Length: 208
Image (cartoon, rainbow, N blue to C red; front, side, top):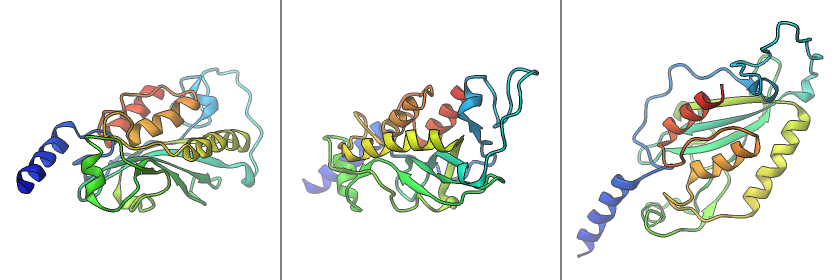
């Protein structure tokens, strides 16, 4: 009976897995160039590009004003994951500091993941194993931010984390958590039922 139950859960996991489950393991060969909040409203695909030939150049930012937020998807042996990474960057676009916000079951055991396809389970909203390792990244979408923009969205992220929502593979998964952040930033978002790699790629395509 226990064996049959486990097989049934595994089948259900494969059939309705969404958001935080994915079979994608190969890295995205062409990672997206970063954009800026200012350029999003002008349809620009890369930071610093404007739609008007008469646009004036913005004042050069000092090193302390260079920030970013990057939506990421990563793979793992059993599960994929969608999350947000953010912090300071340098003038060359290299990441200086990293912080992570992402929704996932509050356990390293597989059991909450399996149960989370049936009922909501307790969650955590910080980094999970593998989030800080670039070799597991399968897709990304980075947005460059000013200090004011960064502090604004960081405040929202902290509020979202403090709410400690539960995790459910369909009703509220890691991609839905990311969607809340993206929508706060004024971005269009795809369905949170997409697999992580496809979710991030679609998010990028919808906004560049």
